[in-house]
Length: 97
Image (cartoon, rainbow, N blue to C red):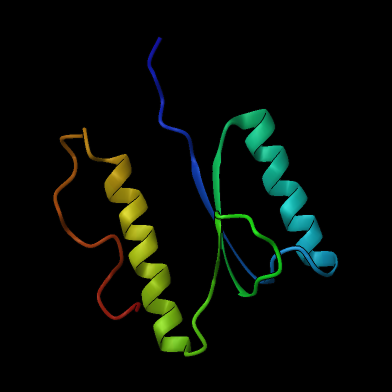
């Protein structure tokens, strides 16, 4: 049997644990971790918890987009570290960020 890398999920939300949508997303992420072994991370505008996988977004929208792009490319590069398919090219098409 093949040893698979866990699926990495990035949740992007306004708040981390306060409010209905935030609570639902947090519960969903915990269920995905528990039952499917995913690695979940968050980028939020308003952070209230001490969870280290939740990152507060930067105030500037352009800086936040850069942070999201950097984080996602890091996660993909980390996943492909042992793969021959890692070409070093960008994950995103030109102009997206």
